[in-house]
Structures are given as C-alpha cells and as structure tokens.
Image (cartoon, rainbow, N blue to C red; front, side):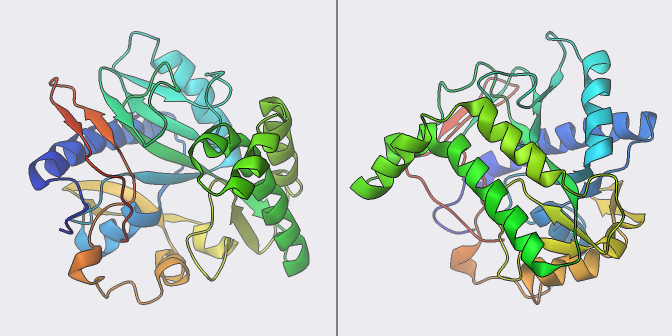
Length: 289
C-alpha cells in the first residue's frame, strides 16, 4: 500500500464496516426486489479480486432512478432515526448537498477533508449513485453532462470558496455559493430527467465528475441484466456487461497500478468505528484504483 493510504490495520477495520453496510443494503434490496449493481472500484474489486481491491477504502453501487426512488421509500420503513443504518440524501437532510445518496452506519463517523461539522449525521458510508437515461446523440449527451456539472459545482461551492487557494477560483465559487441549494438540485434533477422513462442505447452517470477520459455515457445493453459474483465470500450483483463498463472506466483493468499509487480514493480524514476506535489522517491525499 502507498504511503499516503490508510494504515493496514485501520483499512481492514474500515473494509469490514463497509462490508457490513453493503450486505445490509443488499439484504433490503433482495427483500423488496430492488435491482442494483456494484460500481466503480467495488465492481473492479469484485471482478479482479473477488472482493475489495486490497487498498480500496470505499464502496460504490449504482441504481437506476426508479429503483432509487423505491429504495428511498423502503428506507423510511426499514430504518428509523435510532436504527443501526440510515439512508441520507438531499430529501432527508437539509445540509446534504449532493445529487445522489449515501447509505450509512449509525454510531460511526466517516468525514472527508474540510467537511467536518457540515452534516449532523456523518457515519461511515457507501455511495448510492443514480443511473439516468441519455439520448443517443453525442451533442445532447454533452449538454446534459455540462449542465449537471454546473449544478454540482454550485452544490460544492460552500466548500470550494472556503478551501481553494487560487483567488480567482475562490471568488468564482463564492459567487456560486450564493445560488440557492434547491435551485441547483432542481437543475440537476431536471436535466438528468430529460429522457426519464424512455428507452435509448445509452445511460448516464451524472452524480460525480467523470473518472474516465472515455466519458460518462455507457451502453444500456451493459445494464440490461445482472449476474452475481463472489465479493468477500458473498454473492452480489454486477451488470451483465461489466467487462465493457470496466474497459470504459479503467482501460486494461486487469493491470494493477504501480505500487506507489495503490491507495484509496475516499479521502476520509477522520474515522470513528463502531467499536469506538478513532483514526485521523495527518495529510490529505488522493489515490488510484
């Protein structure tokens, strides 16, 4: 593991907490017949390592918007405010500024740099990323991605204008942070829903900045069905077209990154585990998977 990563003993504890969260999410989705897929580094880990990438420190899943809405309603029934787990997104927490959700474990904390104190509930989490339908025409795809990126920049602005050092960037994000949160969320929801309910050859992931030079659009056929694979000894769902998805995101995904780049992407700066153990990062870092 790279020097900038979480220490091995802490990483192991974090991965166990993340696995508990993922398995609880899976249990409820199977109970209510809600389809979801392992995503990003979690998908790569499932295919390449049959579990976590050894140095990975987060969990991501993807879920189509209709199923996301169903899960959000199910969460209200399954977990109350005193439960062991809880679902958090912009509809459940007025301080939460992202266009996707997080499924968290109560009694823990997982805080990213510069975000301490922003949320009343900040337990260790997995990202619940929303999948939307896109048109087949590249120009409209690009417009959708651009406008949802603008919305995300506005939502990030309350952090950005405080932490950025470049005076021009700082000023720009200061102005953006004056735009109401609800306006940015409404813009993101409106644009991502242009093709909602339609069937096309493409789907889009508008939750975060694209991690691939190939872009943010993926073939719908890759998500037409699921197959289960072993992840840390548990059978969990991945898209039937996982190979195409992984090649788009990671190119030759069977090749491991150089050893010095083997550390996670979550950027957690402060972790409090369910057993009361606390770990705090000495420096902010970013890694590759």
